[in-house]
Amino acid sequence: MLKNALRAARARVLGPMMGIVCEVHADMQRSLLLQGRQAAHLLRGLNAVEYLADAEFQVYSQWGEDGILEWLIQRLPISSKRFIEFGVESYTEANARFLLINRNWKGLIMDASPDKMRIVRQDEIYWRYDLTAVSTFVDRDNINDLISKNGFSGKVGVLSVDIDGNDYWVWEAIEAVVPDIVVCEYNAVFGDLYPISIPYTPDFSWTRAHASTLYFGASINALCLLAARKGYELVGTNRAGVNAFFVRRDLVSAIDSCIVSTAPFHSESRGSRDENARLTFVSGLERWKLIADVPVVRVDTMEKVKLRELEPLYSQRWREAMER
Image (cartoon, rainbow, N blue to C red; front, top):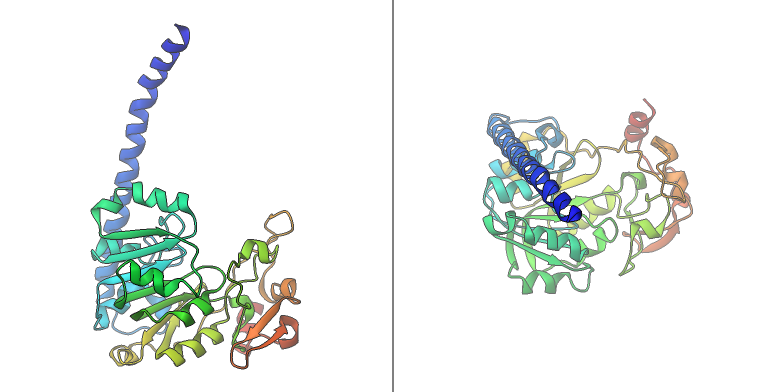
């Protein structure tokens, strides 16, 4: 009897409280979206930028990619209002979510976690918009089949690659789609002088590969080399030195005169960890030394070397920026 009474009392108290929490969350989301739409409107007057990063604003993205993509889409003759993004976790923070909600684009998202994709499919975003959420571990052997069997082959407006590992090798393998814009994460710790990537391992995990979590992905130089082979040009990066933006060569003339410099930014991130997964806050030029003995592949020659054999890794511009 007492337990039942306590349960009833708890329900009377917590029920209204949960309703209030949900309403507050909904109000915050509406306010965030409104601010994003206002920022998007202001970008229409930003006809020229020194760097692409000057267009940054953040609604659902981690580093301001919402604004960069919005600025590009406002100015490019986009062929398709569809996007593909993989490595999205639970999709609360993603590069293309603002396109889905603000522009009503159609999207395919993929992540290796079944639980996180289940959360997306149970969220109201899944019925409000045309979104396909697939739980799968993406690799270079299955990526084209995944895209095709989910109905996204052909032209897409945006392809976003962020899997903290085989990003270079997976993008290299993609043939099922022709994106207008490609967003790809780069590892700034690898520097900006050499076209290098982690060696391809189908089940690569950045948290298992090296305790520091600094060993993943590819350098900006490697991605630029790959982009050129696939018919894309670098138009800039975000200011945090995390994501690079590439535009298909036949479209880039629409913004060629609008961007003063496409030079990539270095990273100031201090996300290194120790053997117990605790943050160590190593910064600047000291970061690469933590992974000096890891193997990397020079994608121009396919030679495998240790990172320390390529030192110095950074251009004078990047070194000076990190030493300030």
